[in-house]
Length: 217
Image (cartoon, rainbow, N blue to C red):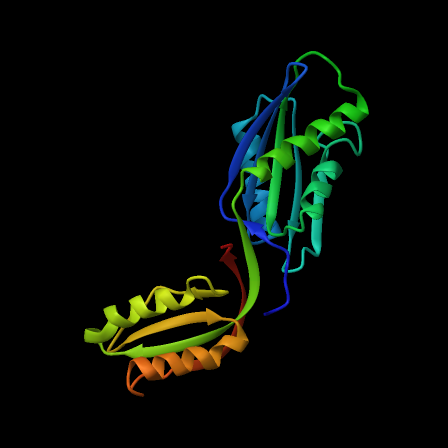
């Protein structure tokens, strides 16, 4: 198996908790860059323009090497950093969390704010579907149009349950399938395609590697 990397989430999740009449609405979303994370934060702020605070935390990069947070007016260290710590403890990356607070009239104190913001993010992530991230190698195979359906079904069955991703086929004079597979699985894929085609179809490594999301299970 390839070395494990921080996971991410499959889709955005919204989750609300209420503490002493204050509403804490968490929005967690997968992103591909810090710039995309900033765009998500800006969109939430536009949508929740009437909220007292829109605090945020983001972790990006293949190994989670870039991290930023904002308390957005809450006392320093009571919102953004606790949110960030939740993401880090769960070993996630390419993820942004925004917690919108509508003040309920009762002050929570520093400890109460830390618990509220971290709980909002933690509970939102409890509802998220996780996807693992793997360094995968590109492999291409081409076949005649008449055989495309058969090989697409074969490849879909092959990637299921493996650390592998099948791209949409590209149609030209022949149909080209691109797969992203663990390096140790390339030889097995090559052998199975050769067996299924009596040696007529070959899987050719592209020499390109990518870190891609692979659904768990």
